[in-house]
Image 1 (tube, rainbow, N blue to C red):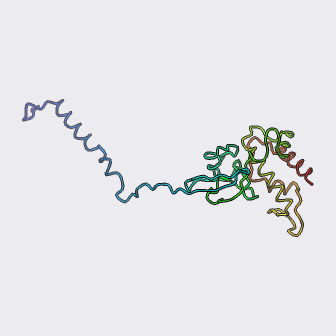
Image 2: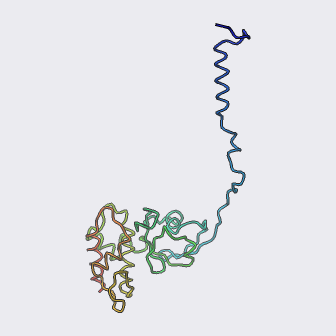
Image 3: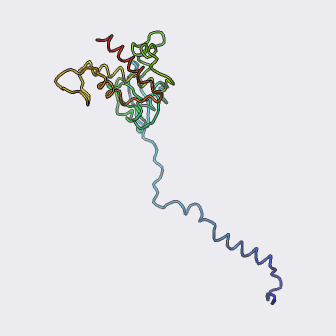
Length: 215
């Protein structure tokens, strides 16, 4: 077998040089070349002052314009009763009452509620003086894990106000007649609040009791 012309290159040296050459071709480009030349620079958040009346108390916050009402309540005002469940407006755990209407606070920006009156579960009652709906939930065992309960209660309170004011739902049969809290009306109006524990029958009992007391 013929030997290589250069006696200084051994078989091991040849393999070492070859391996190094292959590795060099596999090294990725330098970091800065991986960044697109047209990538925009990071944008500083736009801050704005937002004045709210939360549970009867005037509040003024300086918030990023992208802050949801839910995050303003939980992270800035530390009112953690309103829960962040799906964060997509499907479970109802974040329900609060804004301007007399129940809303999913995860789907609305805080800046959209400048000057609004917001009521959370903390503003409905206290441990010493429960709201009638809170007391009914306790009496009827309308909760299990309790995660959805604040949203359920806020929604139920606002729902009864809607019925009392004659606001129809999608299943109201006659728009000329004041709606009644029938089982169909009840299911439709509370359908946006999900209880994963399945305590619906007890929740219905609690709301029906309060509705009967208010009649």
